[in-house]
Length: 423
Image (cartoon, rainbow, N blue to C red):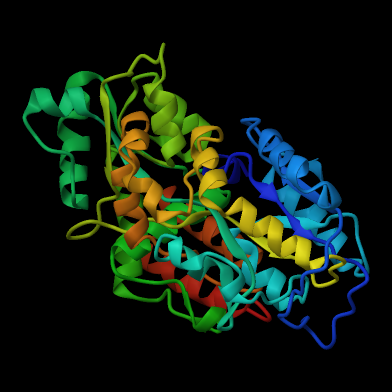
């Protein structure tokens, strides 16, 4: 699942395996203490290479709390599998600190693999509003936000300028421009990540949210997908393929394939993470200097993105809880968060960085991204999120391929979600 690589390149998979601590009951107590010692830090592919220097800085100033870096596979599926296998073993395991994808928090908390954290130990009040919700489950903080992300609508500003029209703010405007303007310039209209994988779940959730609907409620206990808003959102995607302003090739796109289509000059509009803007703007790109970015459009106004990114969590069986807390505070501090953006090209969780004039000059999409993050929503919270996501992918794929109507797709999805045990 390359969505995780795009949404959080260089995702740290930090789980602080603090062996020697014995949890009582399903979860450990929240007190982390201040004991100190070495940690093992696992990461799902540091593709930009920024993490090594960050940890070198920590190790130089914390010789008694040195962090050993362990890189897991790039694939989110494989990373999840290795982490889950290690955590199921109990006792110490081989990891010391885990940076989990935001959609895994509920699963790991419900399973008792990660422990509740004391909010006062971390700079949560400096974070963007909304990101903390991705780190909570059942009303408790189980992780600390580290990297965030939101989908944006990238567009060919040169083409829209020639036509004298602004970037779309509603689905109706997007459809009209994709249907009428794109063909005049030999372009396809609109694409997202529509191959059946986690990216399709994200795109489908954004369509439902942008129409005012939801998928699950009450921490996964209630199925809420069967609504007029959900039918409208899935209908928007299905209609695009049926009418041709979403090319059929987009049904095979993940992040990288859709980014390449836009970067090669084949698309008028693209839904993707900010990394695609950076790539398309880079020197040598056929569309460098010709693109813009705005928040995702919605049913009758601005839409809602799904929050991406990753959260830092502490293993229930923690050996050095004090060092774990100190490392997490270090990685979410202002200096490292700045490096997350400048060296790792990842959206930080510190709100003040999005208003920094020097950073805006270097990353001109930051104000737009902040606007998108302010209205972004979490993916459906569920301790069985993997099963929820698979159900969404399968049903929405059938709707976009024209095998079922949006109404039938929503009804079927409601039934399948209700049948997931322990949802």
